[in-house]
Length: 142
Image (cartoon, rainbow, N blue to C red; front, side, top):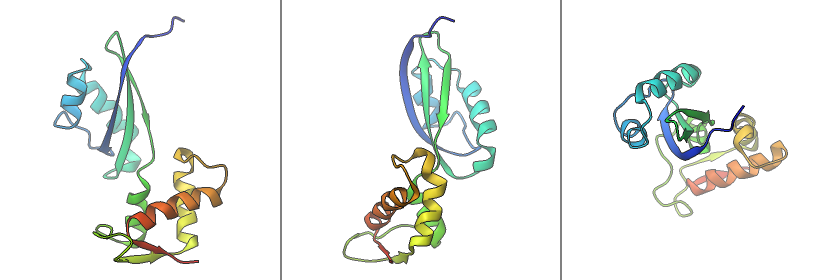
């Protein structure tokens, strides 16, 4: 099988199961010459289980206008806000602490994100999530 020649990559964050031709999807794919509706149908089909959650997607665009895409897990900040039932993080992280998160909660989030994290085990993954939490103005409890 001959290798397809890659024309480029498009990185987007779309709500699961809710891709449509409106911005940001339409313009980003339209300028690459991709059939937008084909992408939307395929993306929505693959992300039914993540309905409404922000899903990062990396679209590989080939020279013949065909495409493949890889779906990532939602961002760590989404999981943290969901776990702590927060609307948003602190407007002044480091000064104002909004809430606190436990090690157990960090590990639960790390298990869900493990596939997309650059970590060898859950402890390291939990440290990455803890860093995200701190940058949102959330105290990490021991």
